Structures are given as C-alpha cells and as structure tokens.
Image (cartoon, rainbow, N blue to C red; front, top):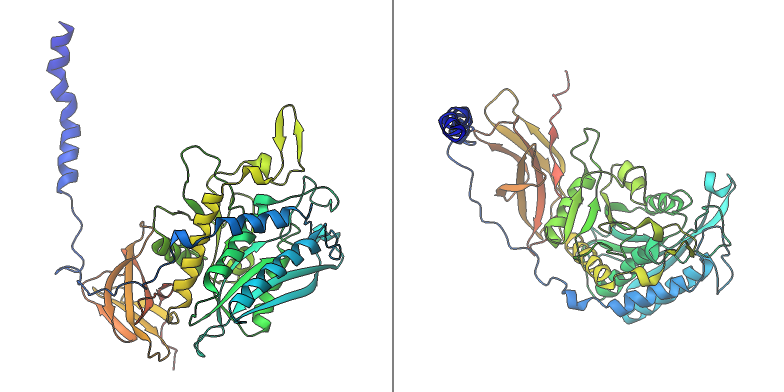
Length: 451
C-alpha cells in the first residue's frame, strides 16, 4: 500500500524540479558580440622553458644546510660572528652568489646593502640590518631599469620573537625561500633578458618586514621600476599525504578588492607554470599574517607570495625541543626537497618569461557605458621587438583572463556588440619572441576636462 502511494506521488513531487531543470537548460544569455567572438591568431609562447631536471636539489639542500648551521639567524643576533648569528647567514649567501657570479663571467653583480631600521621588534631603537642582492642587468636599454625580483628572507626566529640567543634554525621559514632565490640565480645567470632580474635575500622580516621595506626604498632611490616581485616564504615542506601538491600563490586585490597589479602577476605566473602547479589564493596573505611582498603590494606594485600547501605550526617559529612526545622546531628533516625544487622551477621560469617580455601597456581604459560597444584604449612606447597586444576579457565572476582579440598597435579598439557591464577587460604586450607582459586591467576612462 505504502509503496503504491509513493509511486503515485513521486511524479507530482518531481514535477516542479523537472520544470526548473527544463527552464535552466533553455535559459541563455545574449551573445556578445552577436556574431561571435573573433578568432585571432595567437602567438606561441616563449620557447626554451627551464626543465624541471635543470633544478639542482642538492644545491638547494646545501644552501639550507649552510644557513641552518649558523644556529640562529635572528636579526638582532651578531652580524660579526662568522659561525653563529645573522652575519653567518649573510656570509654564506654572499659566498654562494659570488661563486655564481664567477661562473656567469661577472655578469651577476653582488651587493650587500647595509642600513638601519627601527620598529617595535627592535625595541624602537635603530638597529643594523643588511640585505644581500644580486643584479643581472637587462640587455635592453629601454627596460634595464625595470626589475623583476625573487626574494626570500634569511633571518629566523625561535619561539620568542625578541630572543636573539636561542636556537632558531629556520630551515623552512625561511631558508627554503632564500634557497629558491639562490637557485633562481644559478639557473638564470647564464642567460640574457631584456629587463633586469634581481635575486634577493632580505633580513628583518620577523622584526616587522624591515628588510623588504628598505629594499623597496633602495630600488626607488637607484632609479628602478618594479616589474614584479616573487616572494618565497615557507616553501620548504609538503606535510599532507598524497604530494607533491600545488604551491599556494597569494595576491591582494586592489581598492575594489578585485583588480590589482599583484593579482595580474599571480595570473601570469599561473599561466606560465600551469594550473596543476600553482593554486591561486586571492588574498594578500594567510589570515592575520604578513610577508615581504606586502610593502610592494600596498604601494600598488605587482607582488605575490609563494607558500607551501598546508603549514605545520609545530615547525615554524619554534625553539627546537620535545614536549610530551611531540617534536617542535623548524628543522631540515621536515623539509620536502622535491617540492622546493618544483617551487624553484616555477619562480625561475616566471622570471625568465617576464624579464624577456616587452614593457606592459600604460593608461589602459574602458569606455562605452550606455552604448552597445566597449572601447578599450591604451598607450605604449615604441618597441621594435613587440609583435602586438592581446586584448583580454573575463566574466566578473571568473578568476582568469581569456584572449578576446590580437591587435598590432596601441590606441583605441572598439569591441562591437560587447557590453561594458558584464565583463572586465585588460591588455598585455606580446613580444616577437612570444613572451607576454603582465596584463594591465582597464579602468574607467575619465571624462574630458572642462574647457
């Protein structure tokens, strides 16, 4: 009896659901443009990608072991002791970069930038800090003062952020990121790029991002324009089973929470490395935490942070010890060198392509509101090595750009039958070599000045 009742009422209960499915299947958005999107001939990407086999995991391990052997690299520890303290870490990095510079025929220029910084974690007193920098100057005079940089911080901290005496090996946080920067120098120093590439290791991160704040000021004082910053911080471990996993890539939105140069740098890295290698995370950083990309991002510059897939807080900011059968400490045995090698390859290939690209377009605007056409305009300096520009678009809810059309010259391009309301737009430069610049999102074209 009950079975018959269920059978009798089942079609009645399903009817509204089936009607909704049918309506959903029939519902469509108007075609934009009405005749269909253009089918442009898209240039091949820059050839000669860095192979994963070119990454030297032994070199990465050696860098981390050398830094860990300093006992602590707390920024308030000794800068003079060659065996223990932050100065020990500096010396190991300078020696490694000097060796790379020698093998590059002197093309890599190593600089130790010494400065003073003050903050709550320096007891509000000026203290000595040093950044280790290695510049690979660009070969194009028009782009030589544009710098793409990879960075890690070589300072470390124990459980107590103000304790310069306790052991703080900092294998993951952040000898791993520093080792990625050093490996990028090794991989790229034999090449030649249009823009300048900078391999950085900064101090003072744990004391309040002091090294990166100064690095930004240093670059500006020396006339550099930041093309993009790849910050690597805690990229050494892959604790979850089933690895290797994707590296997380954090990027902050702009004033509207959506578009920003940092977010478009993240998209560029994902496109270069592949979605199976990079996990986009659309926020500045981990909740309530910060890193060395922050000063750059807050200045409106393209800056992102790489961080391992799932952190284990027993092995970050912990003085090494055992308690109740639980081991604490940021130590080498907890690292995954295959994963670090993957991160190094992503960084190096991203730098190679971005530093080989033409300059990004300027003054990218969108107009055409209250009309049926979108008008995209931009400017760009003359460049004989540029093949043209890609006009990009995406639904406002989509995370990634798609190519709408390819054009040869800057100016204004009208997208007939494309609403300005339903999508965001951007433009990027494309080199004759296939390298793409970071996309520049279009902003509302300002009204003409009143006469």
